[in-house]
Length: 170
Length: 303
Image (tube, rainbow over all chains, first blue to last red):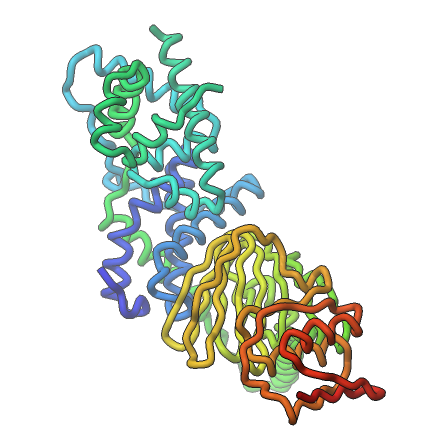
């Protein structure tokens, strides 16, 4: 969908709904705490809304991601995220349900989840962006502001670590 | 460390059908198939878009409320004084906030500066940049007249405005030349967006654009160059109008060139050294069979 004016509330709402989960997961794979991640996402959208006429609309998406990334880095720097999140309603988060599948598969999945949790932040981020968000290495490089080589390196590191850990479990 | 080239290629969906068929037979594939497939189904939390949007709206509403709290003043004298002081303070803040900083390099010099956001800029001869001193950190925007090499610290968008077009970047190294007869942008690291009228071009490392005589942006490629030559006191030109070559010479040596009797519309490819005037004038006149005479601060060209 092409947006012509993000200061227009209707278009903004569509933009919001279309992107919110992408940004959320983008931050979530960096930082496991979902409340903090959600705060960052909301702050990023507030920035977009407040500056709705100050950036190139064609780049709204990448602008959103870079605002979110910077907010994440700032929050990390100060070791605190301003918590003004009071929405405790249980229907905000949607936990994907574990599919009823063979026990072995569940076991494997559990192992994999654990192994992914043990990866370094930087390689987990790259690995999950590729696997879950289906992003190409080039897109990840642009998103994170690092080189293609660095993405491939982090990916290789993740693959090696995952294999070693999963073999250990067996 | 072992070779992950094939696996990486596979995960990025870059394999041809034949490559994929061959890869399916390897041990690597058996090993990683489960990891790659299962990872797609990892339980990453998502948010309910509608609930999230509602939460967003209430945050916005809270913010606006905080901003626009109104305090009503009584009509007594003390309040009038308080109001005057507030006005004065406000005015000073306003003036301070809009104070412009200008950094420039004069004839025959290059100068380097560090900007408030810790980005650095080197200005070529007779060039200047202007920006708002107080708000630059928040809003990285500056005007350029002339030629400059930027090394931008990563962060929010960094915008360079020129007469001919605008350049937007996130964090990167690039050169901009914006002169009367020349507009050229070259990217040495990261990526840069150049907009001119209604066209926009994205440049990555080793790419550049130049504005031609008929107002078209054409791409330049030079993957090997890591910084503009003028930083090492060399001026270079690729198919640029001779007028621009002479103008650059004037800026580098603070000389006046009289070129009435030669054709300055030809396109010139070549360069000159910015420190040695005698060899420089030869480099730009001999290839075109032009004679020159140096007289005080003037150089007269003739056929």
